Image (cartoon, rainbow, N blue to C red; front, side, top):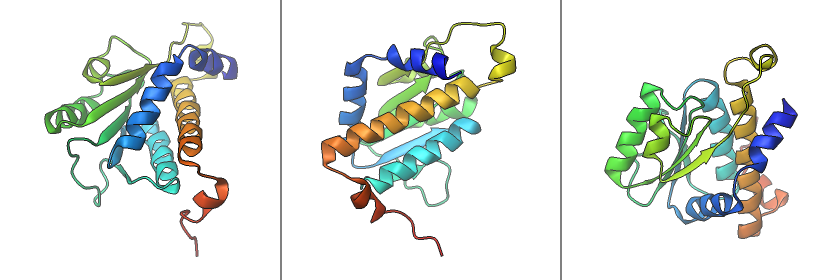
Amino acid sequence: MRRRSAEALAQIAPSVVSTAVERLLRAPSVFVYGAGRSGIIGRGFAMRLVQIGRSAYVIGESVTPIVRAGDTVVILSGAGESYSSMQTANIVRREGAELLVLTARPSSKIAHAASLLVTFHFPEEPERPTLAPLGTLFEATAFQFLDGLIAEMMRARGETEESMRRRHAIMV
């Protein structure tokens, strides 16, 4: 699985990464959405965004404000066809926000709605469903990609683990 994930990440053009970083840093607020396990990966990304000093929200939470023009919304959808992801994308486009989509299907409905598309290409293998069932390979690759974006944003902002630690939630 690690090899397939690394191969998918290696196919992403550096210009896509730099554009994603630029849009995430420029946006007044960043919103993240994903259904199921993709949503769990998205929550981790939103948490890291807050820790590097960005305003970030998870769509669907009761305290999430409305998306506005200029914001960036990140949607994670392996198959790219879920109704809730498409509904979210339609709202994002209507409000004039940027839409960064991570998917494994470049021909999906959600891919066509993207302002910036990140596609993970995985070869079909007979053993994949057993070794990485359902969306596991997409989710693992998305986690690595998003953590890589955080590292790039840290570098661009001059952030360190120490500066992030000051923004880390205090657990009592």
